[in-house]
Image (cartoon, rainbow, N blue to C red):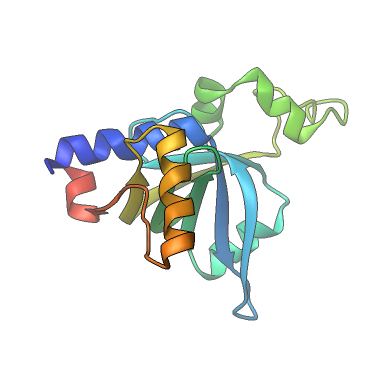
Length: 174
């Protein structure tokens, strides 16, 4: 499959799912995942997220910036996994430029400059540069998928509802 088609499919799937399970490594070596809303694509990052700068995930990223962002659509059985390196940005101009009113819901209004608005000092961006991604895109109608899964259960054969694609870091940079 052509690289541009794979990348288009990858981002279409991510946009359709929206929430990633964002995984970091803690100081004790344990992996921790938490749901985070993927923001619209921007130049300079393959994925980006918004967070409160006082959260533990930023401590995790200081120790080990390697992350995984996984997505799953229960309705279509499509999924995405993106591995990469995260960078934290507290660039106030960039935050004001990208700001969305919906961010207030995640930060709350604590009064003064901590109001969840575009100048709130708590807002930090997590920019992810992808090293590798894989995904499964399903091009079949839901009833056909359900039939194939049931058939697999009855016959004992393995059923995969779509084809798995891989995208390397080099392809993501093209």
